[in-house]
Length: 368
Image (tube, rainbow, N blue to C red; front, top):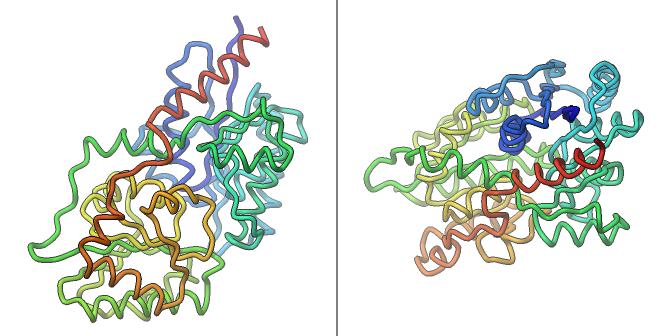
């Protein structure tokens, strides 16, 4: 039987984390010929994660440029992706999430009539500008996909309401929980000084550039000034629209540590040690609740409502007063803290990759 040639595309750190379990599961199948294509939309952050999981790209487009423009990135990537797919002639293409890499991969596959599988399909806020440009990217990718690997029933419902055929939607759980299980068991918590509490911050969204980032930093500084036992660890995204503001407003405080983005395993260790996490990241909204960590989301909308419904994630936006109020409540009120620190994981059981592999294996069997 002819092997099924599958090109797995990754471009950013979160994509690499969530695609790693799928790539490794497919590489273990005798029927699959797996090729890993890195667009390197984010160069260094992507390389870190692939190395942790022992994955080496077979093809590297090396797309990243300093302070890159979305239009130019999309155009360059589409031309490059078209050339690679014409050369590789895969039977299946897979990509995860909602980045420019995913949207371009789906479009190039569509143009070449190559079946495309969308991992983490069906996430929606209903607002094309929140998050920007991710909501547009995932909507477009979803309408060009052959398979929709939805993490939850809620995501499945979103797709069905958009007219996506039920037979093409497979509820698998989120592969981020697979990756977390792979790392958490062999990763001890980071060390926190006795008598100190650790607040971990990750924030980098484009829609927060400018005044919202100033508000986020103001809230962080206010919380540290109010709480003598609070330490902040902020792995700062290298985008200058983020780094410049964060460095100026937070860089001088002795209990705020601004560091380069962490490798995946050290970041898991930091999350395990945290008392509280403030983030605008999608992946952290999924990972931290599974570790029993309360999460305050620095966004007005989330495409991951399941954890909000479960009471382990709270949307607080970027308004400084609102962020401070929500965080201070958790720091002051043990009952409120316990209510959010449940260790609830509404995003899967750690077997999402196996379910994705099973769907593709069935497709392969019908094509031979």
